[in-house]
Every structure is written in C-alpha cells, then in structure tokens.
View 1 (tube, rainbow, N blue to C red):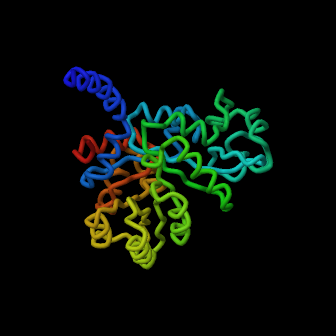
View 2: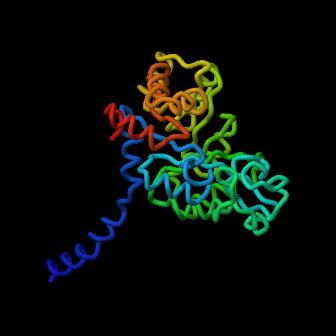
View 3: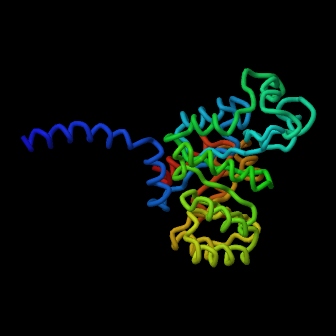
Length: 289
C-alpha cells in the first residue's frame, strides 16, 4: 500500500518538476557558471525588422536565441510603466510631447514607426513585456525614471510575475543599490561604472550587500588587468558594441566585433544593435554555447 502511494506521488510530482525547467534556466546557467562564454544583449530588443522596444522586437529577440533583451522604462501621466527609450515620443511615433504628457490609453492611439513608417505595433507596457518574456530570456531593465515610486512599481511587477531571477535592474548610480536591495534582494542589480574609482566603490559595496552579477563597464577606463580581476571574482563585465563597433560591423562583417574583442578581451556580456550577427560570430569563434 505504501509503495503504491509512493508511486502515485512520484507520478504526480515528476511532471511538476519537469515544468520548472524553462529556456531561461539554461541561459541563467550559462550566465552564472560559464564566464568563458560571452552573452549577447539585444539593445532595445532586436529592432532590425520591427520598431525598437516593441513587443514584436522582443519576440524576435527570443526567437533568435539571444541571451538578454534590453528594454527602457518610462512612466505615463497615469503612472503606468511603458517601454520607451526617449523621454519624448516624437522619434518613435512622430507625435509631439513626452511620455509623461499622455495616459497609457492615449499612447495606444499612436503607432510605433519603423524606418519612418507607421506599423501595427504600439508602445507596450512593462507588464506586457514581463508576460512575454517570463521563463524565456533574461531582461535588462534600463530604468529611465527618477521617482522612487516608479522604481518600486517596477520592482513590484517583477516580483508579482515571479521573475526576480531573470531580470537585471540597470542603474546609473551605484549609490542607489542599497535602497533597491532593501526592497527585494532577489532582484539582481547591474551598476554602471564610469571610472576605475567607481569600480572600486562598487566592489566595496558588494562586500556589504552581496556580489553584483555583472558590472557595466566603459572603454574609457578599460584595461585587461582590471576586467580580468572582476571576472575572476565571479562578476561579469558588460560592454557595448553600440556606436563605433556596430558601425564597423555594419560596413563589413566581423570587423566591428573583431575590434571589440581585441580592445575588450575580458568583457563577457556584449550589447549590440546586431544581436543575431553577434551570436553567429561568437558561435563561430567557440565563444558561445
């Protein structure tokens, strides 16, 4: 009788355990345990076919097998968090004004532009992006607002969806990290370092509150010795291909990425406007899973 009961319990529990494994678990395993592999981040999502920061671009990022999708958050007039890079909506919709000048429903009336032409995509809410990405990809949240209430709302939504482990919360000032950590220590924070001195301050802060999984570096103070010391300690180094390196890559395949690898050899998270090309490049070099 006991054996029968045990067998029944196993039959029930095994499918549940299997369901706990999601695509993002494999990405997180790479992120946390394989620093020799370079992770790819899609800047404003994969926007070479669809409007930047749109749901279609986020979906494209997932389908391409990219590791991380980077999105930007602003707050509407009625305090809804939406995914938009600029403070204004002019460049992306052709309409005047700032995100905060409109309610969420008003913003839904404005199609997002792609190469200057209107599309069927509209400005997504953070909630929509969380639902789309849950269990599928790491999400890098570039938080553009300065209000604490908006940051708390973002943290609450991440927690409500049970997505603490798969969201990186990017901050420009490492001094805000302790406050964020006090709200929810489960949500990993990525601080931006602007100098060698800031790297040291971030490392000192990590001793008090726990290691940051990744630090956003900058070419202006990059050195192999400094970045190697960071990665050896178990923290990843994030660098951008945006601008100089992506421009080279757009002109001739592999040139921009080769140059970035030469000048930032110990960076092991790379953000680009050409995520699919970078992924193929890294796999060809044996630098990605």
